[in-house]
Length: 147
Image 1 (tube, rainbow, N blue to C red):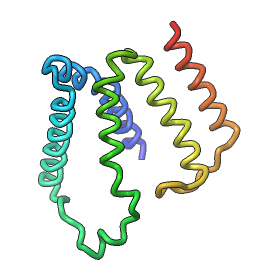
Image 2 (spheres, rainbow, N blue to C red; image 1 turned 90 degrees about the vertical axis):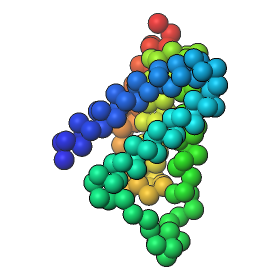
Image 3 (cartoon, one colour; image 1 turned 180 degrees about the vertical axis):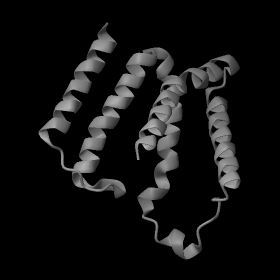
């Protein structure tokens, strides 16, 4: 189970690095939406190759797809919001304030998502310690953004 935290750390590192190359591509090409499409296409190719290499790429049946909640199909729109924010907002805010805000809002939202068991997450009640951790993150991001 601990190796999953290692993979999450790698994903966090990728999350910190990704806005730099994405916004550089947007600025260098002078076409931010083209850059966004490149990001999505490259992501799709990586997923396709990973699925083929692992032998785990298959399409759900119509019956399986029909059982998926409507909101589960909206993840791509949220990914587009992430990509657009990397292209347009990250370069203006800077890496630390952008990522600090992104991660902190993500943690605060995840506390609520866990507490209420929303969007398929198991219920994990918002203890005083979890809420305090969120408050400390807000304070930390404020320090990073101000100084």
